[in-house]
Length: 109
Image (cartoon, rainbow, N blue to C red; front, side, top):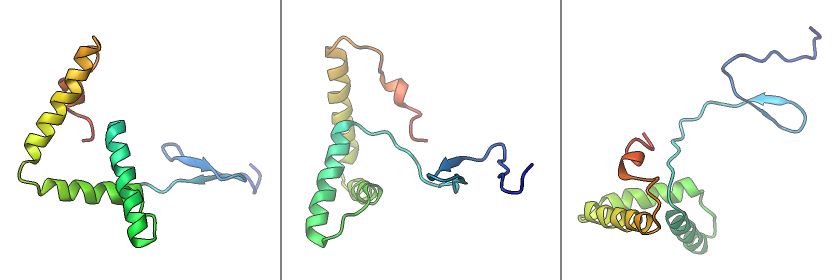
């Protein structure tokens, strides 16, 4: 092996930076799938925050703040129930039974 050749290790992740593959640092970020409607809400709040503080906060920061504040609402469980009913009734009315409540039970954990 040449001195300029890099050793890659099994199980590690690498990303090409334009010149070479560099090892990616492990991340503690949690990926949480959300609906398009929820993503648009996060973007809207992010835009409003940008106007307020003249800095553009990260999407994850915006979403985290929104979720933490929403969790303090006394009726949040009812809000989630109502939203779930709306989402699943749209799915059923399209005749698409490929997505059910049981399909999403383990997501995000």
